[in-house]
Length: 196
Image (tube, rainbow, N blue to C red; front, side):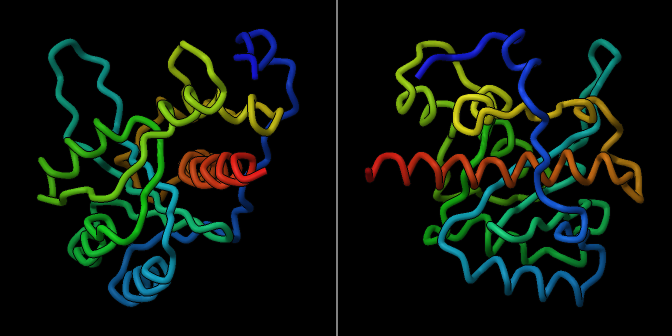
């Protein structure tokens, strides 16, 4: 499998991703209880976080501002300003029986521990997994992985937006949800192809 160039990725059809109606923003206790119960039913979840970007030299982000967790059919977005309503999210993130897959998990692990004392357990860094699977030498991010495995272009247009605002705009919800959802789909696709 070859790693596509930036130019080749730009030519690919846009990855549509998960529909807005399957993206659930969790802001209260009742929604949190139902979301966490749903997530606990799965043995593997797509995972990511978003933090407000820092543009001033020396500025340190107080993120994560958003935690995204995906099943195959739904993505749950947890804006951390409502963290007191979903502190039980740590039961999912630190559960050694539930695998969490994503890109850039080292940084996610650090900021979750620093801000909430959550110890992320049973994770798989997909950049390394895709590199091994595709036998490429360069590091692979979500955008390249989606291009390689699904022949589509993952939009990164909302990456630098302000994740600390609420409510999130629809394009932010889609971007954040797709980051976690594509991680899960990439994991499942690699597993599927590896068993052939």
